Length: 505
Image (tube, rainbow, N blue to C red; front, top):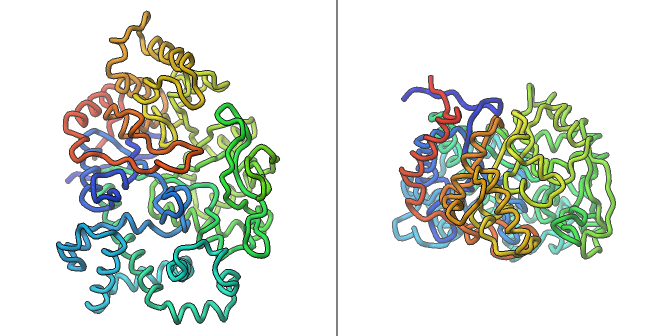
């Protein structure tokens, strides 16, 4: 097979946004096995250069990838069932068992088989984060999955004696957690190598804040705004805006940036180093928060009563660039109130910003920035993201949430006129998803990313996430065979037309 050069953010290219859990697979979603490799094949056939994913850490409450139990660990749900079967760690009868039952059975078989030197090498190389995460996971399981702030005080506060006792009593649980992380790492290395052999780069995602219930916050309490019992004294969110009259209270504890600065941002450097060892490019969620963030007292029920505080700014990114070497392969998710300071921080480090085509046709004060004829080349453009409705759902919305029926009709008329329909009719809306895909692919932005749902023209039922809601999110699944050869050919033809097909050497 000819070797294709891996893409860069400066290349004119395109890709697809699809979280691995959305791949066809078991009842609880896809994993890193055969379906993931098959999706790489689809991307290659479609002339794509990028596969963008959401965060891949172990999820906690609400199953949100943006509320992971660790900044470094991988999700047990993504461990390949097929590969456990192929390696003899599961029997065919285990295929339909719940994931945790599968993993426990595979762990028992692994131990009975005498282990694997690759496991030992992984555990040694990942010791900087793995030992604490494995202990956290074992303690959490032993206490019914409750948040660490509700553990016995000795464990909650990391008393040396209590931790030593827990390591001894929960040795099997700690070993199980290490095993699961090894299997995830093994599957990930195979998938990334498969993608790289085909010239396809992987785009990951770093949430700016950590979940309160995470191994990182439990281990390094002094770096977060926590009280004596581990409770969050100040939490993250965003103030009231066009989308919400009460803002968004996310509930994540805030960083004590002054303390992080004194360490040379050591935790952040390790976090980026680990993420960039897995991905070729990383999207920085809520980039605005690195410039300034909304600080809310922990006891406040909404985000209304808060105040702005300065973020780490250039100091953090200067430290990252010095530690990691060279330019930073990052995408700034600069949505929201983009102040001159935010633009300066983004541009001083050469980071592409994000443009969402759906945002160009409503009453958003920044709507003009999202029109394709206003894009800069150093940008990543989307028809929509995981936080937006699908194109078809957005276009056919009868009026709900933040938009009235009149507003949605105005937006429909605006987008159709922009797409070249002088006097729009119902017939002009056929294939609206492909019309909008064509517009972003034709733009001058270096990178265009298309949600898989938009390639299929799926409606609101396929939406990945509705911000501010606690249920019904992160559950989208592709039907087997949905991304057909016909779709691959159509997408490739558009990408060839607009100069976005990757070059091979």
